[in-house]
Length: 108
Image (cartoon, rainbow, N blue to C red; front, side):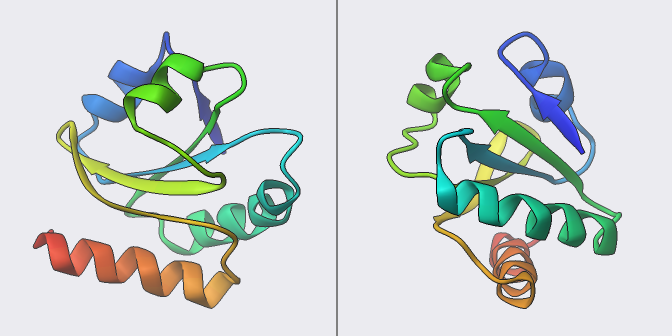
């Protein structure tokens, strides 16, 4: 699982040729801790997409830019544009379904 920060965000996320799925999280957030292994499992089952984690506590500027108000928040990006987002813990199948729905809605 790749972690991004303010120094690597542009290269890894904004300039990616793949859809990037970002998990905005914090170490003190219990739902984030529950989501982490689920996010990891889904990333292994969806290898066509790039899954990354962004610690909002250490990257407050990016969390603010993305208007992240609650965590965990999952944001899908392609070509530097947001395709969609959702917040809160999701079981594995629900997480996969929501990601697929956002990708379909965006026409990607």
